[in-house]
Length: 222
Image (cartoon, rainbow, N blue to C red; front, top):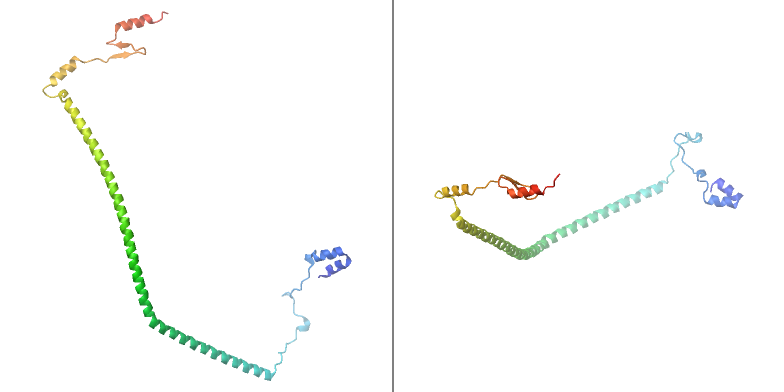
């Protein structure tokens, strides 16, 4: 607790509560390291640190223990390496002896499974091809039926056209009756030089004079 907090707590319980709630965070004192720009203290300028004295017997004992420890660790590592090499050799021998049998059994199993797959795929392919052939045959029959109906209709239309032309053969213009046809056309010619008004009266070359006179009499006198 900071000095200001202690003073507040001793002065009044209210300040004690405030100090507990850390009401002065900006005044919290922290022991920082010495800045880089601050020089060395004068009392330590010429002070030379002396190495910590060692016991010669203890030092020799520690060296012997360290050498013994290193020797034992090297022996353990060498032993473990030898054991691992022997284990690997045994594994290789087992793989060479039993691996061939395992590969043969695996090859036989794979071959059998492959043959089973081939049979199943062939059956599925035959079923699919049969379905496709049935659908194709149905489509061909449908197209053939449509073509047959179309050919029948065309034949019927052609037969009707031929029958009609045979009925009209007497009206054909040939070299033998061309003069008669021309005379008939000249005798029965009509003139279309006339007009029709909104009342249905014909006005022109072949207009009826009675209708014209009635039209004139019906007009209101002005």
